[in-house]
Image 1 (cartoon, rainbow, N blue to C red):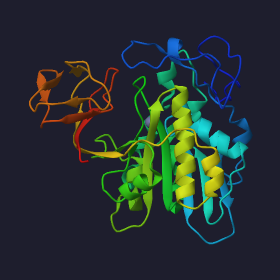
Image 2 (tube, rainbow, N blue to C red):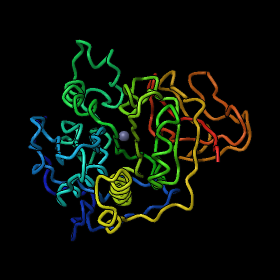
Image 3 (spheres, rainbow, N blue to C red):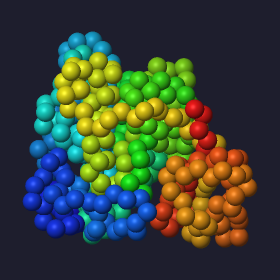
Length: 353
Ligand SMILES: [Zn+2]
């Protein structure tokens, strides 16, 4: 399929009567317990990103805005996964509002545009990537290797911007309907303070990465405790649910404001989400990686579910049993769709505060 731009409005539900920042005019239910399908619930539509193809950088869909005043390079990235629309809606909003840094440089990047261009509301999971997960290729051993894929080509285009960034925010969304947002601070505590300073969302995570490959936020200095560079990945909510786009914009504005890149008053005037009462940090001890396509949970699971007792049978995988390793085990983003060998199916952690 050619990389033709998506139509301006692709709604999997009834034709939208009004739009606001990529939200179709048909309300979506957001209960967590229903077995909803996309056609019942989706209302985010892909924003028309064609106006943003030329960002003045020579790399399509990457915008660089230089204040001319010395300062850090701050980068916002959307569409690391091509079907996670919330970040694209947020960056589209920022570009339409002509956001410019007060000092330093601001980079706004729409990452996996080849996948995004294939977004089809009838098969919304199919456009997460084209050849491979763009968020597993950031180790130089992969990125600088001779291997080729659609995603590796794009990662190599994005690398100079990413490697110049002092602060990076990577915007994502999750499978589970109604799932509350969380920030992944990486595999060390070095970016936790920044996440707390932003104040949003309510759950913070320090985890162990993925067996399948290095994430963007774990690349180079972002993961080096001796480096001042910091990166955060925010899971803004559920795929295609309008609140995820509100959260994406809210987090972008708080991030830029906290770093002094934009005027605090301007950012505050456009915030959309109330701050949580407090932020709680979950520290992940282990991820469960599927050994085979037979992996299945043996009880109903959901994101941030807390299992009181150690030793509770959680999943089976081709004869292997997975049990909770400790009391008060918190499940992070259990994979609700069939997995494959090597895929992270859930992460297990505990609240630290
Ligand atoms: Zn994602």
